[in-house]
Every structure is written in structure tokens, then in C-alpha cells.
Image (cartoon, rainbow, N blue to C red):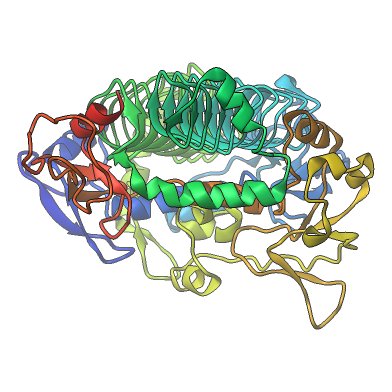
Length: 616
């Protein structure tokens, strides 16, 4: 394999061939690339992340037919997709053999051209999930071990939940983003072991909490910030138990008008309290955000139990080790590089998408390897195979002789996409090989673009289908209070606030947002029962738009170098008065850090020491 020469003892500046911005490759990076025998990247970390994310559509669902049995199915592929889509029963069955699509490697064409041809020939499953673990949860994708769940994505081990993403081991919770071991929670993000927590974020082990942020081991708190081991507090003011519940009688969370006013109030209050520069706990030598129980994780986002991991995101619960540029899942994986949606005990997997299961190792440029596989290069949909290239079987000796030749060929005859970007060995799949348009994928959630921006950058864009739903009720006509909602609401088609009636045709709906808006939605029976049980008003937005509102409350997958804003006795802007003397006394705190809070933002950002002095 031809690789560029470099010194692993010094950092090097490179220009990203995608965005043309400068990025740095550090000595530790070169050491990792040498260890797994890949060249240094030519795209910057952010562009590499986006390139992986355009391969995953988890939420945009379509109706179609199984290309094998003809059964009506739900899928994340449009009916006119060139890829044959099989229902789960057919895809996991013995009715077809992915090896039938095997082909010889053609040294007269670039590798990615050949892979694209295989890509459109081999059947894909309608959904990515362990089908035997799905009980009455047909509308859940990239999720497994689900029971009685609806529109829950990238989640596992949930029961009686709806409208969630990254929700783990939870029950009776709706409209959640990033939750673990939650029950009876609603419209919240980043909760851990919470019970009856609503309209809140970053709360751990809390009970009966509402409209709050950054609470730990608290109960019966309303509109509070940065509390630890507290109870009976309203807007950070303590009350006796009797006073608290008497005051709470005037807070009617069943009214949409009251909820909206309270959200606006706490939205302004958030600028009055300091925030820690990053969300994390029990870490050693980490940079990023939402990192927990990790060691030597740099530029990570939502990583739990990671060790020696860099430029990686959404790796949960089970540790991931010694991996770079790894987005989504993990699960006791190691030496993963430029992978998307992979994990489950895998080792030494590079440039792969949706490959998962134990006893899997040495995969390159492969997709949908969901059963034990080893030593596969450029393969799709294989089960329990090894020493295969483009779905064709080889002997161990043939495979080990051919793979180096293919890598050399990839470098001598690289694929060049429509924007002139060059893909030699070491690059992830080109975005134009994705079966999805940019705004169908999770890339739009974390790196949102307009249609014009996406096309200019070389991504495809799908204009939403014009909806001709027969709207039976507009959101402004919904009852303000849940007590005034009858069971017949489940028969109504409700217009999303973000949708407008087209002037060209009265019954056509068009969205005024860029948030995968469905323009209309319905209230399902179990959802209505939940609102009634929890005394919560009906939502005003469709599930997709609600999801995007929660995303807006979170920080981006980007870091800035900043200084602590503690000025000694108060914050730099004078808004927050410290409650205790900090270790730096009356002088300004000298600590600096990497944070996902951009410098122009209004939040008060403290280093860990100053923040802990105020809240612990």
C-alpha cells in the first residue's frame, strides 16, 4: 500500500479537499493511522462526520412493497429506489443468497464505481433492527428490543414509548432525545434515571421535576437550575413541602398557554446561571461534550465509557476503545475507523456502514454485514462469510494477495465525484453513493443546510412530496387544556404550526421550516392517555418539528477555545453573583478549555472547578 511519508513526532497542517479549510493532524493521529495501516485523512473532521451521516436515514419513512414477496411494507427507502428492498422476513430468510451478486474485481474501473454497481444490485432490509426483538413497534427504525413503541429511532430496550431518539431502557416516555432508564418523562433531553420529569434537560436521578436544567438527585423542583440533592424548590427558591404543593396548584401544566409562557420564562433565566463548559462526569483527559465514564476521548460527543477515542459521536453504554471517526453505536468495539452505525464486539473495521454483531473483524468498505464475518472487502449483506471481495468468495491466500492490489489500484485510479473530490484508499464512501438525499439523513439534524447550500456542496436534495392531507383541525383551534380534549381527537388530522396552506391549491400543504416537517399529524390513543395521565397539553408541532426543537436546545458538534468567565466574585458580565469563594479568590479565573459554546453566545460559561464550587 502506498502511503505518504511523514513524521509521527510533529503535527501537520492540511487543507480539507472538501471545504478547503485548514485542519491539523497530530502525532497521536499518525500513530493511530500507522497502527491500523491507513493513510492520513484528506477531509477535515467536520466534513468527515457529515460524509458519514449522509449515509443514514433513520426517521423519514415511506410505504412500499417487498421486492421479493410483494408484501406492503414500511421502509426508509422511496418506492422508486434503484435498490431492491426486502421486508425483514425475506431479508433474514434463506430465500435469497447475497453471494449470487458476487463479481470479479475490474482493474479498468475505479473501486467506488464497481461498488456502486453492487450497491444497487444487492437487496437491503426495509429497516435496520433485530426483527425478532420488535413487539408491536412497526414504526421504529435503527432500534431493537422494543415493545409497544411508535416512531422511536436509534434506541433500544424501550417499552410503551413514542417519538424519541437515542432512548435506552425506558418506559412510558414521549418526545425524548437522549435518555436512559427513564419513566414517565416528556419533552426532555439528556436524562438519566429520571421519573416524571418534563420539559427539562441534563437531569440525573430526579423525580417530579419540571422546566429545569442541570439537576442531580433532586425531587419536586420546578423551573430550577444547577441544583444538587435539593427538593421543594421553585425557580431556585426553597419552600417547605406544604408551601411547595400549595404554590404548585397555581401552575397548570395541562394548559398549553401556561406551558408556553413558562418555557419562555425559563428560556430567559438560563442566561442568569453559569454552565459548565461541557457536560460530563467521571472522565479523565477528555474534550468534547456529553462524555461520561471515559478516558482519553478527544473531540467526542455523546460518548459513554470510551477510551482512546477521537472524532467520534453517539457511542453509548458499552465501552468503545482505540477508535477514530466513529459515529453511532460502538458496543464493545475496538480499532474502528471511519464507520457509521457499526459495533457489537467488532474489531478492526474500517470504512463501513451498518455492520454489527460479535465475532466480526477485518472488514473494509462493507455494508449490512449483520452476522459474523471476517476479512471482507467491498461486500454487502453477507452472513457468516470470510475472505470475500465484492461478494465473491476467495481462498485465504487469494484474498490476501488481491486486497493489496486493489488498494494500490484505488490509489492509482481513484474515484472522482461530480465536485472533483478525489477518493483514494482511505476515504469513506462518496456522498453521491448514498441512497438518500441530504435532507433525509441525520446530517441535516446536526449540520443543517438549505437546499441551495446542499446542492452547492454536491449533495442530493429531495423536495418533500406535496401533501394533500385533509386537515380537520388547525393547531390554533385545539383546546388549550388537556381536560377539554375528548377521545375523538385521535380521529383528527392536525395541521402542524410550521405548515401553510398553498395558495396554488387550497388542500395542498407546504412546510415553512427546514425540519423534515410532515405538515400534519395525528394523536394516537396511547399518546392521549399519556397526556391525560401526566396533565400535559396537546402538542402544536408534528413529531419531526418537535424533534428539531429539542435539537436546538443542544450544542453543536463543534468546539471553540475559550476562557472561564468567572471574574472572581461574579461572572464577567456581572449577571451572576458567586455564592462562595473560588480557588482563584477575587482574581479572574485563569482556566482555559475547549467548549461547544460559541464565543458569541450569551450563556455564562465556567470551568469545571468554578462550576462545581457553585453547584456541588
